[in-house]
Image 1: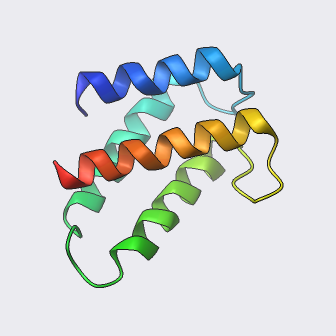
Image 2: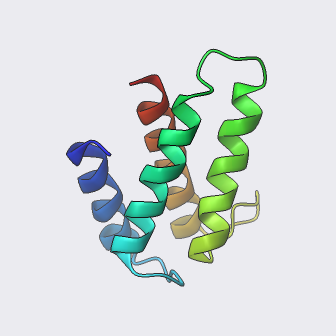
Length: 91
């Protein structure tokens, strides 16, 4: 994953103080893996659904609430994750 995305995710974790169920290194690694997979689907029909599915999978692994009723910290972190995935997928 691009070092800027790595730094962005780590900064969001620090700023939100989100209570995640994995350590930061694991979350960064997993996000990078899922972003790489998502990049193979860029431009394909159903990409938006795949993006949301990957975002939710990362949130689930981290123990975050990705629903509309999520607490502010979780919602912000999930938004950052989605942005990173989109950035990685679009290269």
